[in-house]
Image (cartoon, rainbow, N blue to C red; front, side):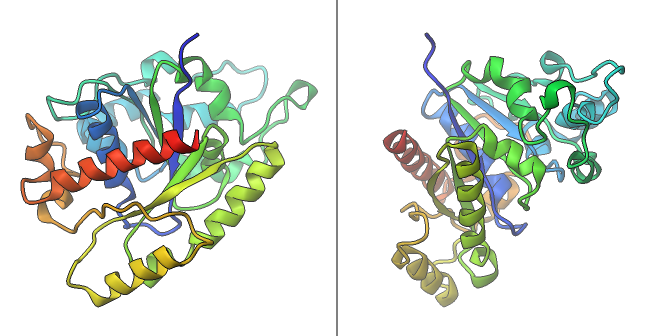
Length: 290
């Protein structure tokens, strides 16, 4: 029997906190540095993670053809007598990333259409014998491929709606990327409460893997004080020891530009080392909690 994949969601209720950069970096470092097979599931309708990994031109082509996760959720809203349109094999993008050293990352791309679809999912038809559950759509669609991977990273929207719950439904745990300031960390207890309640309803456990500090400014008193507060609060998830610094190379990593190595993409001035260290800590925490 194939080993079970580790499925981890990334979530923060505030946008602009480095969630996309963290997820992309984890996927690329898991592949190139730790030889892991990775599937990235982009549930965020902003599609930033998708364009980071395949570029805007390829994304537009897939979106026009309906080969995104929006089609999966649209299928749930169709009358029972209409054919389903989601095609897993054509939607799954293999060997993505613009970095030559990254060879084992696949992607299920997002779409802007998810914004409209999410609001309609609560009223989806229940189906024969009430078999349809709006939070179980993703699990049913991709369960046959999940264990082809070592890690599945699910990038969730910055909310706790039905699309996010689909991501959490397949996850064994979650991380919270955040800038260490008051506004970015304010929603962490709300995330904890909602995920815990959702897991209890399922009769399962969704583990708190940890908080990833992003865009860290070593000379910022606010950042320093916020990190100490997070580290000292035993009600919050653990803070991963390696912080992702605010650097131009890391900010520029969101561009889909061909590069040979991860050092070229994330920078020689500490960016590469920070992402590699954080990924190592991530692996240890996930496997420790498994």
